[in-house]
Image (cartoon, rainbow, N blue to C red):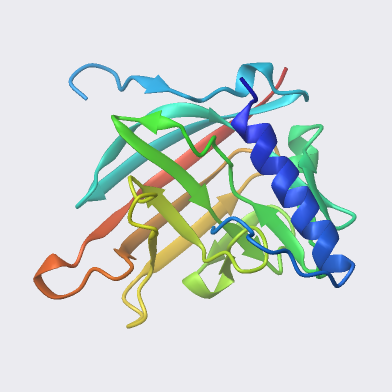
Length: 212
């Protein structure tokens, strides 16, 4: 079975190349009781020498608690590639629009954590190296057209949890020189959920980086 992390990275590579060439891509992808059981994090047979150990601690309407291995991706020459070292991952790189960017850990989009399908579509724009980045305005998706979001059992709905339009959401990304880091957020809203059905999540996603 083809590794879906590789498939996602290949899609992102092609998207970045097409954008830099001024092309239009049709049909681009839109973007427990005991210790949490994690399946689908199929990083082990992906090529490369870096693995991120990702921990979710999310509360709210769709709580998630558990760990999974994730992809360490970095923009290089307008292409999204797997980072070759933890230091290289923490350094970030220039995306297809020549904006210095840090990509938060990419887990397989079929990954199950705590019984839920969970993944991030997030990056930090105008990245200046390891440090702290506060506020939702520094957040981007990963490729052009992506909305920055945490997805929790949202694929069927077509919506992830995003920063609310009323400014109530908060966000802080911390990146360290060794490639480890965290994203702490509050009141991210499930887009299109309104009124008494409005759903929000808060929490921390942290990671460590290992060269293998």
